[in-house]
Length: 452
Image (cartoon, rainbow, N blue to C red; front, side, top):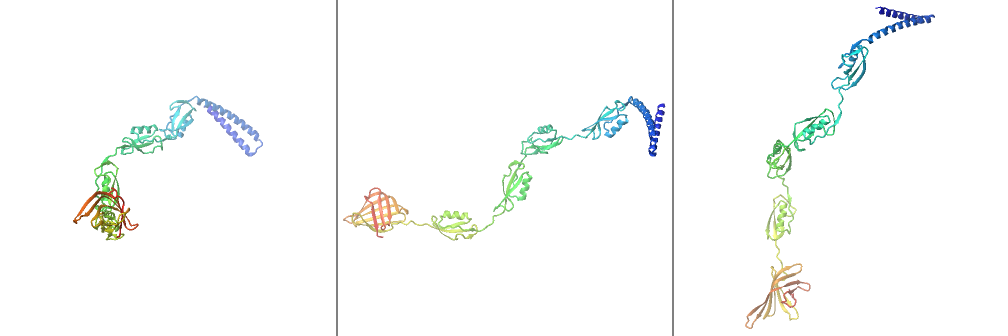
């Protein structure tokens, strides 16, 4: 009580001194120096008294003990106030991330709550900056991995794997991952979820029979069977327009679900347009038939089937309807023998002998000569005439000598029947025939010159 009265007196003296100094300054009094000095002395005395009082108070406070309050989970400002109210002061304030304490609130303190401390001691606190930002990581490639391996690959980089319902796929073997929600190689934050899907074996389905159905009916039947649908178009005289002509996979065949079945859709009968009649002149009958058939026309003929076309009833280039019949006239040329009934003479070192030669269309030749009525010789032979070389080669030449006796009877003597040789026709020096016998039945070549 005595100390309190002493402090009050000191403060009263100090205030009075300050008031005097202020009044002197305002009045410009010459004795300001003296007053100031007096005030200064008074102030000094007051300060001395105050310091003494403060020292006594501080000594008393430093010797008292306080209980540290619990400031965990309080906002930083509230924690600071609670510490001060307990006669303590806030020490070091740190900030760090916390997954459990809200941002701006105290995570921990030192000394701990309820500990004893001297008044004025410092309390250190850690304030939350909120949850820590997760790190970015690269998403692994899960394709081809089994489910357990895929989950482990994700866990290794602190990602969470989520297996979706398995689906049919041919990309990978059954039981392996074939797709994932976040593409491989892209970035995600630790703790992010990555969904992935494991493959199932594609189901086997039966291909439906759609031949004869309309386009829409066929499409529905095929897609209902979980198959892909495709189509082409074509003319068909036997299938109605917009109906299926054929299908690429036979009905009843088992195929993987999702396989494509293509069908051919009819455009109806092909439109009829006129066609040009080909030129058939000099064609054989077979060649004429082939040409008309290629043009969509029918063939007929008159004449010799082994001949060639010498006329056609519809002129070449004429436009006619498909299926029109074209009749051709066929003619076969008969070979002309170059020695038909020639009459002449044979000349050599012998006397002139009259000669007759004849031939028929089949290539049979006869040469007859005589030096009188009593004796003559006949050669007969056959062969094929070569137009290019003007020759006939033969192998069956026959020589017969005919004589007439005194009684008037004739006698034939067959000299040989196996003559072989060549007959050559030439009109270089008048029409002539040269006959060479290969069997030496004739000593020299004989040339017959015909008058006609």
